[in-house]
Length: 267
Image 1 (spheres, helix red, strand yellow):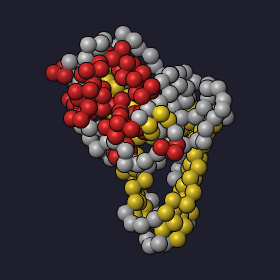
Image 2 (cartoon, rainbow, N blue to C red):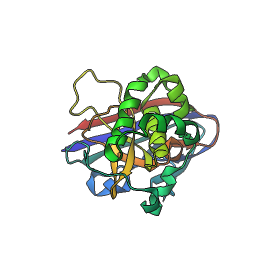
Image 3 (tube, rainbow, N blue to C red):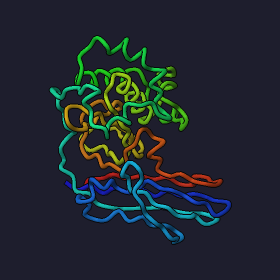
Image 4 (cartoon, helix red, strand yellow):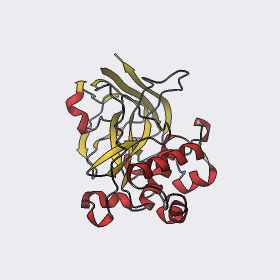
């Protein structure tokens, strides 16, 4: 199947403002692009691209004073298959993990392993390992956090989500990531497009989604503590240690968000 994905984001800037954007479809899906996801700016400005430390495509620009609109509208080929489920995927001992995964065992800005370690071992230390352990963590987080857009707060950490018991998709992901890391399972944050295809109504407002990947066996697997069921049509934008590494926009000056629209539709 094919998915039309895109966004339109507007800013008001009282002065010229440098920006770093992580809004491009991930390079791992580049061959699936039927229509390229070119970044369009209104008014037109110079845009340069680079790959960050995690391999994500990023864009740099300077927004002029006044209103600036960023947009993209692309078509992505997708298998139409739900997320892979591999109940037999085993947990790899830390001493045998690939070096590239080790950074995803450590605490990070939004995932405080030091504060959650005791809780993690109390809840999951005597249970199964591997896939079943990650799924148990997802089940716990899914039940523990109350979802609501009114609960969104961009400074909330995994520890705070655990204490407060509420949040949005990124909070589910951060708490699950932190608990996985506490249990010696590498876990990394993902952001991207995820539509409502294959799910029953009613549908909420469309937004970018947050989920995570855990390293089991010899590969990374997708998990989603917010939805807690395999989903169809994920389109990855960026991966990192947590949301700090994959901020959709990082601005270096005063600005106001003046418009925000995201779409993910089957075509």
